[in-house]
Length: 475
Image (cartoon, rainbow, N blue to C red):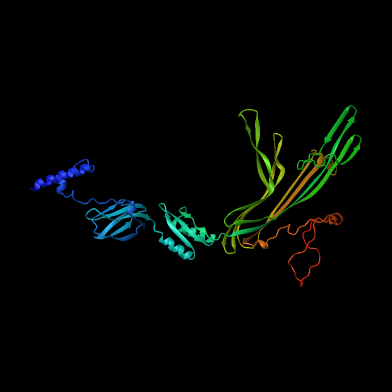
């Protein structure tokens, strides 16, 4: 058989095979002559066959291949590049932050090896700095996005976590660091607070009300002089000393009042380091926040009520920096209802609030006390009212004028003592009602007792004997 007939026969056989395999166009004699018919088809490998590799920018790795390299495919040369040095060795270089892949093929088109390249910023310098600053911490740093990083791992105290975050921010940049470090031992802080406030008010009112008439022939003169007391309003109504002479009535209205208000609160709160805790000893009062009409525009309206808090309030956030040292943010507020700036609307009086507030952040040891003192307020109001001209007369001018005087003095002291809380056994705890027993009827009737007297079980100290009644007493 001649060479031409052999090629035609091979072409016909190829046509039949390609038809069976679903090829739309048959191979030509030239394709068969070039050897395309007999070249083994290369197996197509997907991403599952590629090996993941992480590279830093301007960093490289050396790859040794199992066969001779004929062709290299780089999906995005702007992210990474491959340089072939020998028949079986290549260098992969990171160019910019991003992702791409690299495949190596032999002379027959078979895939020798494939890599999924993730080019990230070089974090080795930050890792070294973290290891030097915190050698006992287990901190990992990874790239996040184009130029961000994320911190993971665990540390012993919140102070170490904050120190690692601050160091990463200085090396990477503000706003590009995500802190996911966990604290292995989250301490709890017990806070003992004493809020003491003393308020003293002194009010003085003095005035003379003149009422009467004077007549001379056909002329009659009526006069009235009533004291308004604008600062405190008339606190004395219907009372006083009255003197009448020839149709003139003079009423002496005098009042002096002094009062002391003492506020004391001693809350004890416990919170996890870094978490906030609140306390309120007081109440809530309603205010009108608006009116709703159903249907809109009708006269069937209902007032919307909101409640505002007042009393002794406390908010604190502790952070345990190291063993025995605590960073503490304390917000203390003492408020009370007042009628000084009250609002009257639709027949409803909405009171105002007198507020004393202190906000501070300090660093103190466990067991140390923070004293917020010196918050003193002294307010004095005095006003004279009288008849123009006559009130300025010597001696007699006192008959035509009144004096209204008030003095407010307030002092607030806040003492805060934090402790690092530790677990306690149940047997070491006691309740206020431990050992309480109601007294018998004869003891209640004849002796006026409300509970029985009891001793302290399990305590025997002959060196220091105690004589007298012990137990829970009700006054």
